[in-house]
Length: 373
Image 1 (cartoon, rainbow, N blue to C red):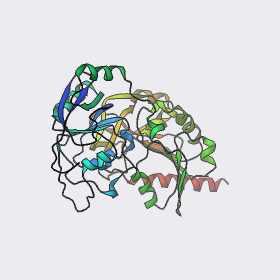
Image 2: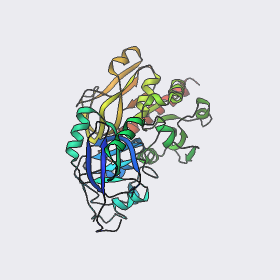
Image 3: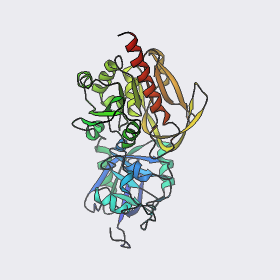
Image 4: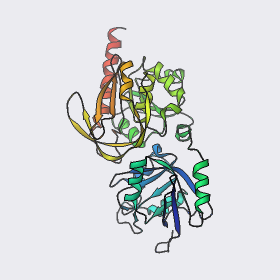
């Protein structure tokens, strides 16, 4: 977009019939529209990391903090090769960023990846609608689209169920290092997870979401990491079956979607939340230490507390806002998972020590194997 150029009018439509009129500052879609699930994130900063998180696949992202784009876009802050959001909604877009690291504007970034964006709407009102009615289908359209056309699209178009398939890698790749060998199952992993493992000298093999136990065994890993990712964990039954098997053989850590898949593999149940957790300051209490951590979160599903009674899982952490499950561990196996993002980006680094705890579990398991060899 040329700086200073007048922006075109566009609209945001919700499935309940609500409409907002604003200005387009992203991809020019004057003869088309963008459809997805409308969600909101409460983070004050971190829009680049948030937009490039694969867990947002298929969603129209609303940022509740009013000013966006004021520090531009830098190459170092991507969490994936390209963003997969279906649209961006903000109150106020800053056309002239101020940041020595910035290489382009938010508008230019969105245009490069053909992502529509709307500014100048009441995001407080939109967020209250989503909090009261739950996340819902929506679309961003050109100004000329009629209400009848918009509602026809919203009422007759289903949200996708192949989120993980769309964002997962297709072929394995390998990061050499001198430490523990970790196989990471990619459900839509963030680059910061890989960075934390590499900083701890881990050798990392990343495998597609549908990797089988045989695929995993041939790499002779020391441990397994189940990554974050988008969508409903029940949409990847092959991964649930794989985790049932590999948890018996290797220490395991799950993050976000990986946490939900690990829980399902052990007989728990998951459910879709009303509006989910998306933000960088969610308080989580550790039940064993009574410590509270601030965490970065992005998920629309949660593990059902009542369903754990028929499993070998124990709750380790809870969310202090709504008492939902934030962590579980297996009572007999060296396996645990958390609902939030210990790698942060964007967000606090309070819980990055969990990567060290994971490696400690691996060392203990290797020691026990040596004793019984």
